[in-house]
Image 1: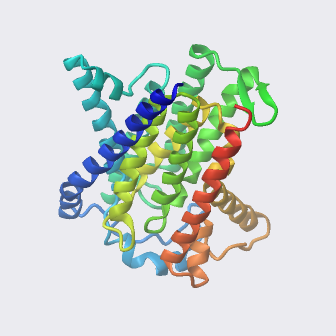
Image 2: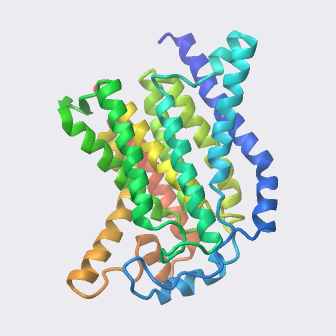
Length: 356
């Protein structure tokens, strides 16, 4: 990549990021109007955890937020992203302009898979959120049963793993400082496992501004990795998602105008998995997404302790609620988790680029 090409590509990525942010901000009032008009929030605070135990602390901390703030804020992220992608693609094909052709970031080898994954998973999240706000479903929080959501995410992961293995002929993962590690057929269960773990990290969406900041840092890091690897369309996709996340954050910082909900976070977790594998940098995902890993680990530790020892390790799990329970204001938890997310994202990006 020449210096001139690098500048042009940077303009493409950051220009699309800015366009995504502006578009998302501009149509937020319309989204907000309908979310409040149709009362798109839970009608009762959760009082039981998924394992069946009572959660009085959680109910006390969230009784005023869960039943007064709309869900489905994540619609802002994926609709804005897909709208930008579709509009730029249509203009590029209608005008045959070199400018719009360069701006177009839909490509078979880089963005078809993350875009389709993003859409499919987001529609699952939308269905779950609608089920929750309408009070449908037998799950403890209403909505689609966890095992059903898990099955659908598993099928999405299986389709992605199949595409990587049989269509793209991927058999190895890159280990910084070592080189390529051959996995063969083990590539498929690795892909599925990573997507399931990241899907489990959706529990991070529990405090105003938290999920947006954490995922914003992760998409920024992987966008940077893609850019330096010469995967400009993939970097542009990550940039567009990041722009929409930043617009969401503008309205989600305390006090939140709306919550991300499953309609946003499932699409983010699954598409981030695809980007991590497409950049051949999945090995640094636990570093880039350190907060996400800690959130999942805290839930697993809590569940195992309650089952094996009959008592809790944390006052509430996942861990961000524990800090709330010991007296940290929600904004303090959010800001400190943001700081950790930014530092870990920069560190992960640096490690991923070692030797390349």
